[in-house]
Structure formats: C-alpha cells, structure tokens
Image (cartoon, rainbow, N blue to C red; front, side):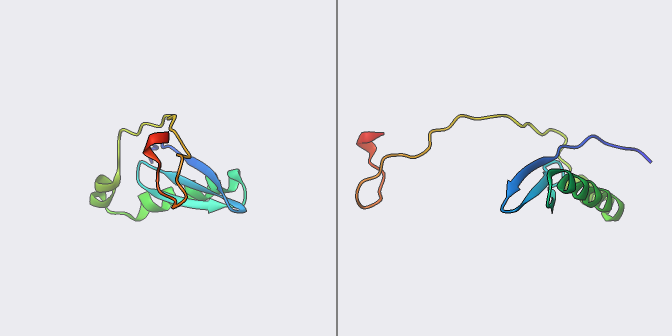
Length: 88
C-alpha cells in the first residue's frame, strides 16, 4: 500500500473542530484537534479506498498553497449601512 502526504487544515468551529483536506476536498470534525485530525485521516482513507480512479483524478489537486494574507476589515459605513467611500 502506498502513502501520500496531504494537508490538514483544522479550525475551531463552535464547541468542536473542523478538519479539511484541500487536495481532495474531504472534511471531518471532532471535539478536539486530535480527534478532528484522526477523523479526517479515517475519512481520507475511506475516500481513497472507495472512490474510483476517475473520481480521485478529478478531485486531486497536486499543488496547494497555504499562505497568510493581510486584508483591511471593517470599512466605515454611513447611517444607512452603506460604505462611505470618502472615508476609505
């Protein structure tokens, strides 16, 4: 059996954690980070076991880039809730 390195993005959501593998768009969840990671690993193994080679090929992204971005948040709005372009 071969193995493959994949990405796991885990984030807190509500009272638990959601884990996503962006290479094949498979997700799972758990009460802890470790549980979410383990559940994602199980979901991925099941996906690769059950999916056809065509399904795997169509969903598998070989190049995934994860980076940090700095964006402006909270633009000034007027009393009607519309963006105030003169204050931007």
